[in-house]
Length: 456
Image (cartoon, rainbow, N blue to C red; front, side, top):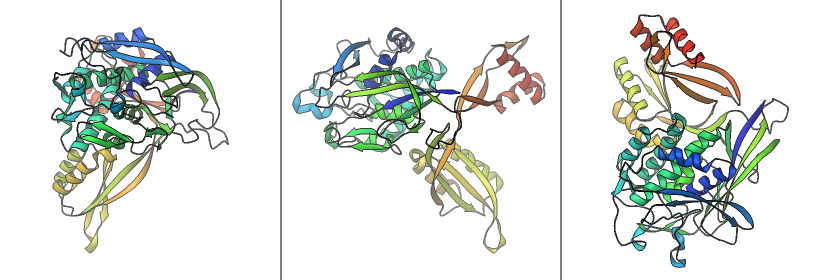
């Protein structure tokens, strides 16, 4: 069975507008993209007028698409002219952008215009996306990308994620880039996403705090675990937005000269044009490929699962009650743990105890460390880097009537082995809610919900 793969070739890095240009060059309809972005209601939210246009351009003899955002009388750092003395400000596609607490931002707008702008907080952007008319898939992707950026910026500046604020112009650019990329991925619907090594660039970048080394601090956090390289270009080539898009969407990074190993059939290739004109082509190449997921003796074929590096935290505890352990588990999940399990054990002096195991990504590690120390009786625990392999999951939702029985939205998760659908399952909470509402058994509730799905 064929698997349709979307492949990012980041030989010159990646930024938000380069990704948008590449997706449109690949075949995403610009009018459809603009229509979907219009569902955000940026104008009614008081963020001012905007226009997204796409221009054909060339870098290094290669023709592609350049995405340009016009923000009325406000500066557009996607298309702004960069003075030679300020060239360090520009990323692979545009200026170093993103949110900073207390209204600070990564690029210096003071030199671009003499008036100031308000700030848009991550909380406000999240509410805007959640309340929009975007598809559930695009919403989920956009929120995940923005969450990763807010988390990275909060760690860099030592503040809470909710306090991360985006300068007005930076917020508009970020929203259009990020939500636009999420919409494109939702429209393309690849079975899997792969990526080459990511070029970060080198040198220095100017931001509100002065000159910082490339990659910028937020980009370092967002590219953690990715195969990256530096020095190919004397500028910042991967921006936080570009890094966050990859972190959210890529299933597998393939290091082999930027090309996937194994056999595939190239369907179409698109090029996103960066703003700068350099000695080497400032391009992002994105390809749609058809691969075979048929099992064979070729061990180099890409696997139909996602592999990631995580941290396993383990503590042995023998002096907490069952209620206290239950509260600890709730607190750990609330803190962002991916999984929490309790395993009975026998400790010294033959005392019964519990092994508390917590699985997390690096971005939530410090908060979960604090939770373990503050909300359990442990005085020390172990941390081990582990590799997790997971299958792709998709969630759909039913909000309809089955016959004459109305019921609340129910969520169904479907697991895929590559492109092969393995199994589906209705969320327990939704089955239980319907069973309570209608006085049914869990089996009857599941049958009603599944019949509703089948009728859609």
